[in-house]
Image 1 (spheres, rainbow, N blue to C red):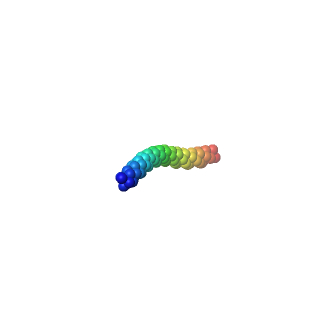
Image 2 (cartoon, one colour; image 1 turned 90 degrees about the vertical axis):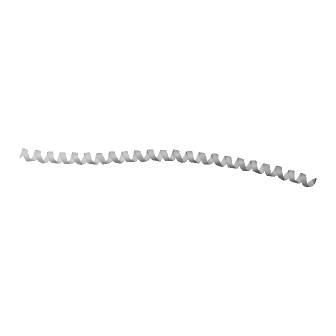
Image 3 (tube, helix red, strand yellow; image 1 turned 60 degrees about the vertical axis):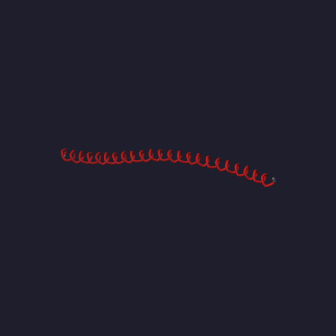
Length: 86
């Protein structure tokens, strides 16, 4: 009879350990899902920042081109004005 009680005790202990293991596995799966959601949110955020950076870079390039054109037109205007006024 003591062997059967000992076996029952071990079975109960094994059952508790299995329940704890299942709880840890469920918590791990939940944590992995939350980590994946965080990674997805960061990826979306980085994509938005990259798009904003590229837009700002395009605007900067356009403004450089525009200022270069304005300088060229002003220089040409000044040359023509000086040529025709003398």
